[in-house]
Image 1 (cartoon, rainbow, N blue to C red):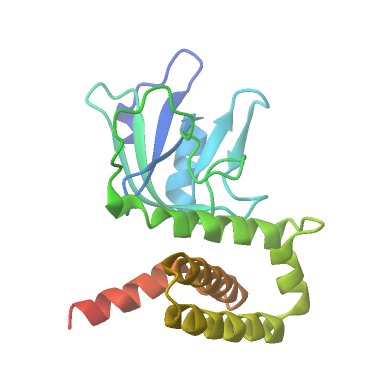
Image 2: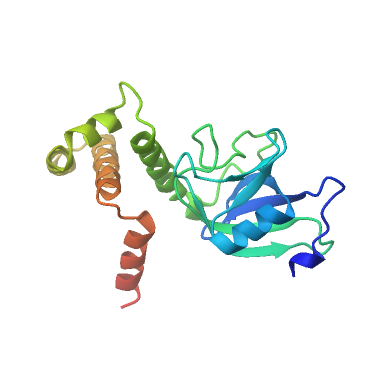
Length: 208
């Protein structure tokens, strides 16, 4: 099927990368035939850098790999759609998607089903801090102190959620719950557990 793809006069074809779970468009890059074949063979995305004039593997330096689930091309055979399992963030700015700048937004009520993508974004930032330590980062402080410190913080935050819930201030409960979720995501990263694994466990319980 690769032979049907129409590469341009520079030997390139645009590749749109999409989250296979949420449908969120993550980035746009370019592939040549060798990078496309490398993507198919390796199972992770490889693109062609027009500025450096070389093939690069997304995530090789950041750890934010894109594991390919599906590759399609459009009706004109001159564009690719790649659905991936995105680990961490897709954008070098730290945003999950490269398309975070709004030119027009007529959707004051965004799809609430996509709200949970913030968890993936936070996981990506946590992983980036672990792979690329930043001075003064609280996340790096937790990783440096190790599992005992992380578990202690989870215990403290759990207690604070309980205390907040006993009070009448709803916002306090929201704030403390967010703290607990964040520290739990740090723990998952420390233990090498993917967020998708937790979702699969929840899904299994829901289906019973």
